[in-house]
Image (cartoon, rainbow, N blue to C red):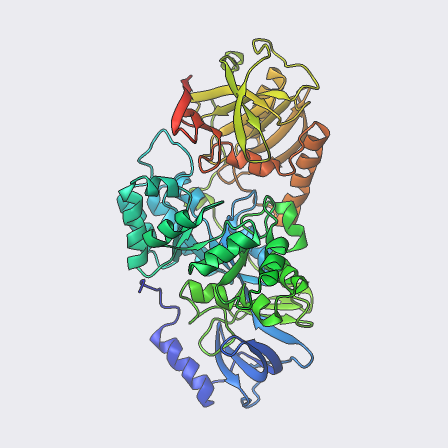
Length: 579
């Protein structure tokens, strides 16, 4: 099995035993507690003792009264394990800690996070130090080990064999993947296959990214080591994964809110066992999370008719069991971390109170103040500080082909039929200039995008898959002004019209993440979306559009560091131009 970090010292373990023996008082006692016992998948009434950050006893006994023990009468309430988000992308304008704070207030006390931003954006040692230092907070944070960059980089050796194996062996890294480069593996990429084998050797699962995969493809990927997939978009696709032995993680996200339909379909197909089903929010953008996180997933499952015990297990015990951490997470049982949600009733998954590692994060509906401060700069997460200038002669757009948006994230080739040599494009048309501009100012990729909007004059973002700048607009002077504003605020997203800032989101952490509470980021994001929609953006999620313009795991044409890239033919159509 994988090397696991010891959560408790020998001295602490002895103290836990002493609490049960009556030699030390527990920190908290929940009495008259009706809780979900995942060992037998039933609701049981018992007394639960917590000592510091650990559940030490569950049963009929009560300890002696002691002035240091907090006694909580749970009569009429329901207790469930803290929820687990198995598929978080904690850099969707928010950062890992602002996301953790918001999520935990709604009962999600464990996160399994994408490492992509730190893998590509930080020196290797700093990235590994960072995830270790983030483990000091009440919310448990585990991480993935990505095998591929999900785009075409100029430095194709950015992910080395040595670094990958160090990521995989880290005690806080919980899985390999998500594997977006599975076509490369099937085509003979033995380096990624070796990393997949190393993942399994360490006792950690490999998560796939297999949208629309046939039975043959799923079978092949299962043979190569993939044990879970979150890309089912229908009940039939989810059932296919279950039937062939995969764990299936069902998604409810800002770009794929499929969960209600999938669950209804699975129930119609006669599925009665949910033990190998998880649920996730798959990196939803901020405003989508106003309705909730895993608490919302539970509500959807309950409304669909999933048995109550299964609905909660799909975001707690099932997740912990799949990832091999059920000895510390996902259950209310002796030896587990004290991640506990107190509910008004079993049909209301938004908790009244939340305990994480034995600390109250929420009591009787009110958030408890916690110190979520962190020295991001000390870990290499600084503001955008580039000083070079974007000049008018950088904004030259020529060539026969551009890209056309089919939806928020899918783009296809587009044959140009408009004049692109002027300083502006006609208002009301759905063509705009678009640039992918190197963060250090060394190269650029310029073309025309069709379908993004009709009247966006200048729009710039340091939020992108690679950390490079994306600049879009109909008016070149406003595009330059938007770019300058993004640099002025240290990174972010800016919408400019007649050289005046209309709306912006400040992202001072690597140009991708805000330091503000998630609720404030929601307001800024909604303002940007509203202003873009008023100017003709029609796809609903411009944040994911920005993130995925460079993502080569999606069809058909992408803007990458190497140039305009044809995903299907795996070739650069027009290379990036050095400045």
